[in-house]
Amino acid sequence: MNKAGRYIFKGIIGLLTLSAGFISCSDDEDGYVYPPLLSEFADVVTDASGAFTHIHTDKGENLAIVNTSELIAEGVKSDTIYRTLSRYELVDGGVKIYSLQAIPAPYAEPLNAFPDGIKADAVEMQSIWRGGNYLNMVLLVKAQNGRHVFRFVEDSLTTSSTGVHTLHVRLYHDADGDLPAYTQKAYLSLPLSPYASRLASGDSILFSIPTSAGWQQWAREY
Image (cartoon, rainbow, N blue to C red; front, side, top):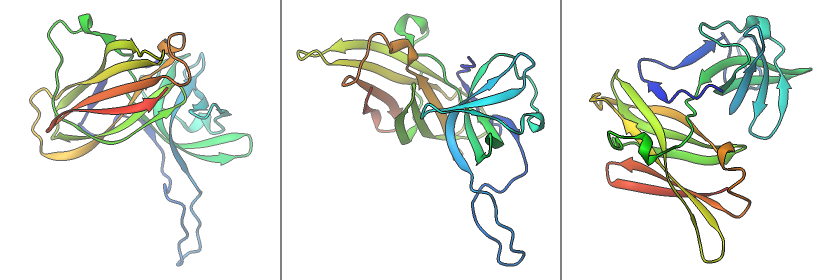
């Protein structure tokens, strides 16, 4: 699985982008109707030849990609799952992909994996939600053109007196001295599959991020 933990602000981390309208609308002048596109976090799978063949949605759908031959990108590995922001149209036989944007999805690491300490440069949370086997989020990050590094820190897994388990995870963010010139969005996914044997329905995830006002927390059901 692709689980790169770096988000580069020198433009979008794009696997590919095809020419298409991303909004469902009609043009009154020429009568053209743009296709209705879905925009979702999803896993995209490559086969032995490195071609994109299927999309796995967070709803559990496994959909064939009908325009595989049109999807060309550099550095794509064979037999790999890529976490993406996918824009696609539902068609007969599966989906037609219009664009894929790579999303960092690093596994949470224990504290001893950070010998130089936890970097906590400020971000803001725009949205956070559980989707399939991931905790997904959209962060607002002040940046110019530097390289920002995101990782996830697993602090602990606690159990309450009633037997409810809570996974405590926080965000590592190293802006590497980049200037806070303007706001960009960072899309991230925390894989939850490593906790399938330790968490169950009714348990929770407590996720913390460093902000300009200090650490802030969000609780989500597992």
